[in-house]
Image (cartoon, rainbow, N blue to C red; front, top):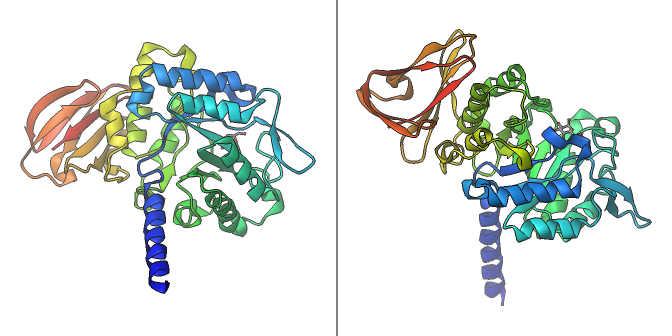
Length: 378
Ligand code: GLA
């Protein structure tokens, strides 16, 4: 009897460790309502996003999570159960709809009494809310610090996040846990240990090249904190929202993929241009982001506004980004020895989908203003 019990316990331990390792084994991909819809979001917008992902090629490209951000909450009922507001209505029906498309669904709350937009938070209702999300069928929670600063000390952040992690884990439904506290207290050092699958490393992105570039290029140095199941999150994508030029969105997608960042589109998927869809669904670029080795890339060379970034891939090759942050087109050179290749290497252009041939010593491309060239080098 004791042996049987020990065996069962061992098997259960291995099963649960296995599950822990597979949650967000590669950076989560999907869509989030905030960057485009902000507080105007409705259940109809969520359904339309799911419809678009399921039919426009995004699902096949790997986009899975359809995430509701802030502003879905209504009041709590007499028992303290959180209810959706009238723009959302029946959350179980909404989750069922998204699941019926072969996709997963995410929700949003705050450890504070109020969310950043002033809606009901989870303060003192953590377990009740976790159970409710699981009962509705949610697969992902973004947990945003916001008004928690009014009720907790900054030093309590790890325990506050762990509390919700434990409440989610107790539901028996696998729920990806996304920490959002803007990189405070160097969250990359402890985000994984409190159960975070991803954690925001910065304040909010906006749909402007300067802001996107400041955040994206500023991630250098954080690479050692990322890996399968626990990712640095430089915030959601702005591709398709209209505030940047085509080359700037190419930089956004290239850089986020080299960073092994979560790829959460943030535009109106029901009204997107073919060019923006092509950026979001470039399978060769996405394969860099989703590479099984799970290594976040880093800067390997810089000369003024010209930067070379590289990410080692599972097959022994490298993804390389040649970036031009300058105000006019410029040649950017990859020195092969900078990524440990002596002699020659085969180079493929991942945006042009073209093999460029073999090069010895270095490879140079002209990169447009604010643009990027993305290569696979082996
Ligand atoms: C914060 C977060 C954003 C978004 C808003 C919603 O600013 O960083 O990503 O969730 O709150 O109010």
